[in-house]
Image 1 (cartoon, rainbow, N blue to C red):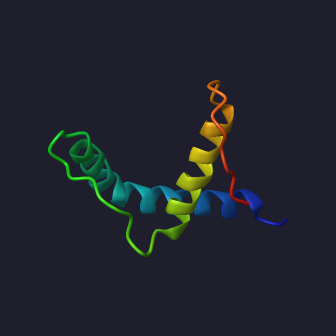
Image 2 (cartoon, rainbow, N blue to C red; image 1 turned 180 degrees about the horizontal axis):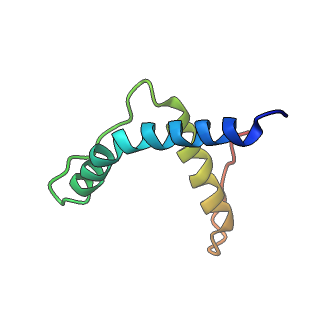
Length: 75
């Protein structure tokens, strides 16, 4: 591909710029979530993928649990 290195550099700098804008906020959010006073709640209706992933992950944890507890796996 002609000018591959130039295009790659442009893409990398663009991602860095984007991420650097969010870094202070993301760091502050993570610091706040580590507080014992941070409320925990349900996911937003817009976070369906995260809820599905957590359900999938919990099922896998239960399957690998050594206690022989029967687990129903959703497919």
